[in-house]
Length: 172
Image (cartoon, rainbow, N blue to C red; front, side, top):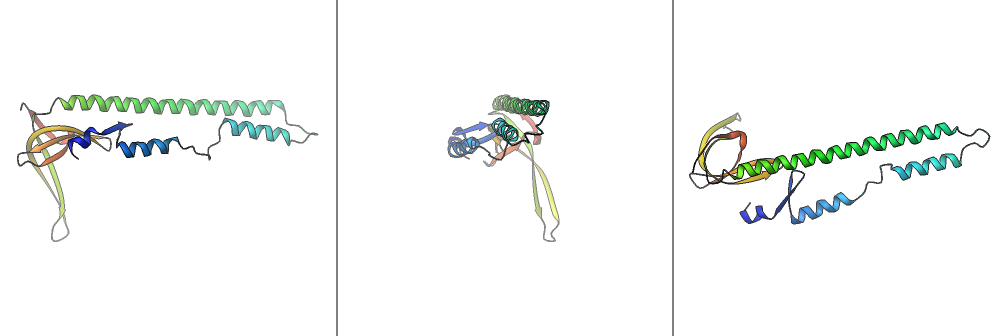
């Protein structure tokens, strides 16, 4: 991804979008799901139940009130759950922003990190090699909710380096 492409993105809820995919995601989020019963559907069912009850053996008013109380409690629990999810997303976005800010101060610094390659040999056995690479930090990137340091190695190759793979950082 080029630097101009990185600058034309937006991160929402830990996901990074370009303009087209953000618009598509926002449109999909506004569509409603008709399979979920809401307050209006509950009240319609309650009125229908009252309308078609046996007039010689009507349902007790306390039963209706109990159903209404149960639905109200369920609705409040759903609202609390939605609120907690929103707070969780907000905290995640703040954590990511702080981390990116801290990592951005490393741009221009020398870095060494472990690079792991995996491949199958001629016998089909898995071979795992870990080598230490050295280079310079050129940026910070968020990919699929993970934060990476963008580094250029001594041969001019670009790498997305997981923070856990960093061995050392020294002044440039």
